[in-house]
Length: 188
Image (cartoon, rainbow, N blue to C red):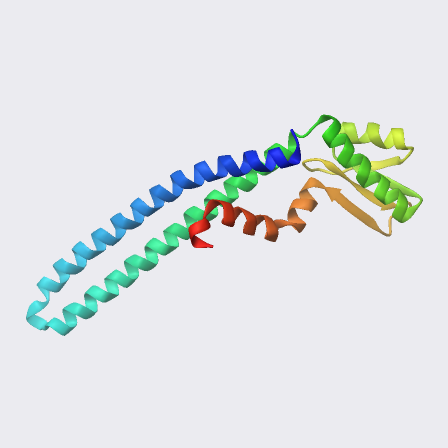
C-alpha cells in the first residue's frame, strides 16, 4: 500500500468517524443548550417577583455557561477524533512492510552514509538489520518504535533519526492542521 493510498485511507476513515462523532457532539450540545434554556426559563419565572432585570441576568449567565460547556465538549470530541486518527496512523505505519518499507529504510541509511561516511545504525525491526547488512553498515543496537532507523556517526556524536515515531513527531503540527482541514472543514 503506497503512502498516498495510506493517507487517503486514513483520511476516508477519519472523515467517516469524525462525521459520526461530530453529529453526536452537536446533539449533546443541543441537549445541553435546550436543558439550560429550560432551566433558565424556570429560574426566571421563580424570581420574577424580584424583578425582570435579575431574571434576564440569570438567564444570560446560564446560557453563556451552557454555550461554553457545549463548546468545551465539542473541542474535547474533536481532540478525541484527532487522537484516534493519529493512533490509526501509527498502527498503519507499524504495519508497513515489504518493498515500500525497505525503500524508506535503505534511503535513510544511504543518507547517513553520505552525511557521516562512517556510520552505524540502531534498528527498530529485524528487517532493518538485514537492510543494514546488505549495505555494509554495522548495527549498533535497537530502538523501540513503529519502524525506521537512527543513523549515527561512528563516534556517536551525531545522528539522523529516521524512525517513523520521530518523523511523526517532527510533522505533528502539519499533521494536525491537515487532519483538521479534512475532518472539520467547516471550522477551519
